[in-house]
Image (cartoon, rainbow, N blue to C red; front, side, top):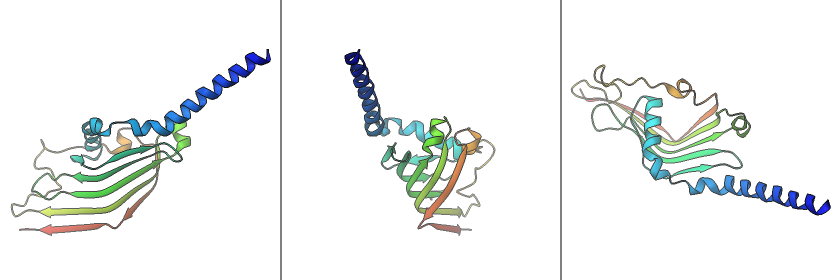
Length: 166
C-alpha cells in the first residue's frame, strides 16, 4: 500500500511541476508576430482608431500577469501625423481575478506618450473621422466586456501637441 501512495504522490508532483514550467516558460513560446494583426484589429475596435503594434511584445505570467508592447502608433484619419505614439505600454493584471475568470487591470503604464492633434489647412483634423462612413464607434474596454476593473494608469514622460495649420 505504501509503494502505491508514493507513486501517486510522485505523479501528482510531476504534473504540478510540469504545469508550473508551462506557466513560466509558455509565454516565451508564443509567436507574437503571427498574432500581431489579430491583436491590432481587436485594439482598433476597442479604441475606435487604427492601432499599429510595431515593436516587441511579451507576456509574463509570474509573479504578476502582464503584457508589454513597444512602439504603438495610433494612425490619423487625415494627414500624415499620427494621433499618438507610445514607446512602451505595460499592463499588469490581478492574478486572483484571473483565477475567477475576470480581467482586472492593476496598472497600465505608458512610457514616452506623444499625442499630436492637428487641424490641417483644409480644416480636416487628424483625430476626427471625415463623414459617417469613416466614423468608428470604439466600444472601449468595458464595452467589449474585456475588463472588469482598472487600478491605476501611469504616464511617464509624455507630450501633448496641438497644431492648427489653417
